Length: 123
Image 1 (spheres, rainbow, N blue to C red):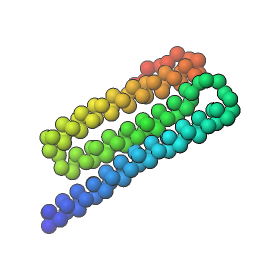
Image 2 (cartoon, rainbow, N blue to C red):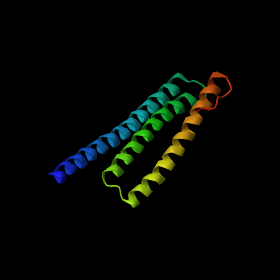
Image 3 (cartoon, one colour):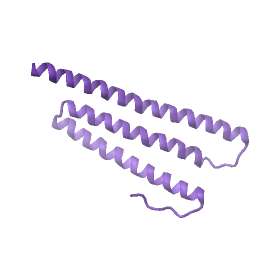
Image 4 (spheres, rainbow, N blue to C red):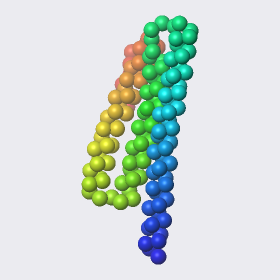
């Protein structure tokens, strides 16, 4: 009976992981559509050469996608936690967290530059 419950939990977590990974990919796809639409509008309106608002919009989508992908990795490791998987998760978490941190920092700096105010450090 315990094996049946454990198998059901593992199956449920794997389905949840797949859903979260799919959401992450979907967020990136939506971000790409937003960027393409933004670029088309940018060139159609003949605006200046600043792509900063378009970059900021895409960066927000990437930040959310990174969070979702990290969550999927955590779910994957929680089902069968071997030391090898835990080590890989730690490496992935560090890389994705660093990417997310610097991406968020750049978003804040670009927003402050666009608004003409000094950038405030994010906590």
